[in-house]
Image 1: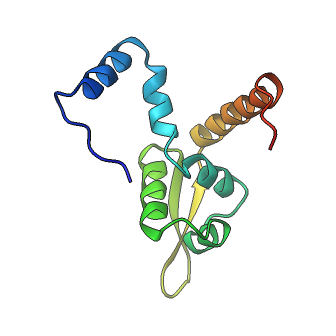
Image 2 (image 1 turned 135 degrees about the horizontal axis):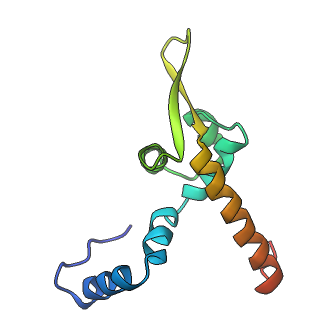
Length: 121
């Protein structure tokens, strides 16, 4: 569990300096939270409901899964749609064009890591 950074701490200052001088850090901060890219990837492979994602990631809490799904929708990486004629009402998530573009970049980063950093998984 992360803690808030004090506004006037050296950590906060360093984060502001990095943000001002290298916008890549802001992108990495946005896509980097635990589970986020894994969830986006699963949605792209048609694991698109909350309950199905929970089966894929049984150790993730409902709170974190819900939070990550909300972030993905807010960032326009996914959309949340009602599934018609379901009682109770159910939803599915779908990856947007922006989300698919990000997944392509992440896949390239993964391949680069396998080749150039000898990451074996």
